[in-house]
Image 1 (cartoon, rainbow, N blue to C red):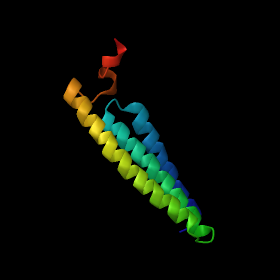
Image 2: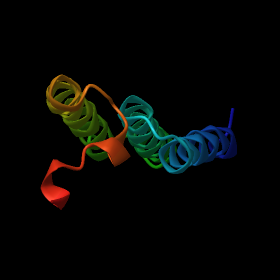
Image 3: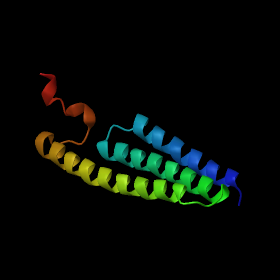
Image 4: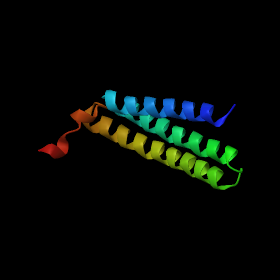
Length: 100
């Protein structure tokens, strides 16, 4: 399997993530789209690391992205639970308390 196969999977995952963020009106789907975009970038870093010498730089970026995604998921889900508790909905358009 060459570099183009990894890049194709990464492009598809990134595209699905962007489509998920743009088209959905649910905060959980938006978070899943962000996770897909982060995973696409991880695939890119790992693929370029594998085909470009195999140093530690790409692996360190992948580990950093995994840690960032875990922290983002924990914080974002706490925010989603709080928004659901306050507004009884997880749609971003219905959380309009600050608009008044």
